[in-house]
Length: 113
Length: 120
Image (tube, each protein chain N blue to C red):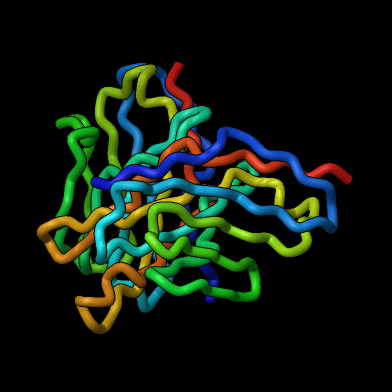
């Protein structure tokens, strides 16, 4: 299964943009890139996903490199509520018509007031 | 939409005891997943159900672990003869699954708050 590499931690000032990088150099052509985040003492929460094109939703934007070997999650204005561990995940497809989310350690984002 | 719920939220037990956790997925979701998360690590996949059928099991799921989803709705995860190494957060997630199998990569999972197990 393809692996992802993320920085262990990042800091951001409140109300400033945050760019969270992810490297996935072994990505295959059909792998979707998913981002989840986990706030303290909560289960993970879906943020965004993409395949080739950049994606926007109400929570964030996802910028995918042209060669798809890296991607960046963009939070346009960080708030204190965005302090969480952010996971970049490549879906691992199994033979049973299903998939697994393979979480790494993620990036712990701290937001400074 | 009440989201995914898990009970209990916390469980403290003595080594050797059996414990059972319950997960109630989002009502129309036919896919259900169990994960385990230890301190400082990301969640690790344990098992997956599509409706009532358990289709995937991780090597992490030893013989002491058993999961069921008898009517394709709620699920239970039982750990027999608990060990201190079983102390972790047990997370449940559910998903709708894509209508088109080729779009499986677009499926998104909704997680519950987890059950934190402490084995003394």
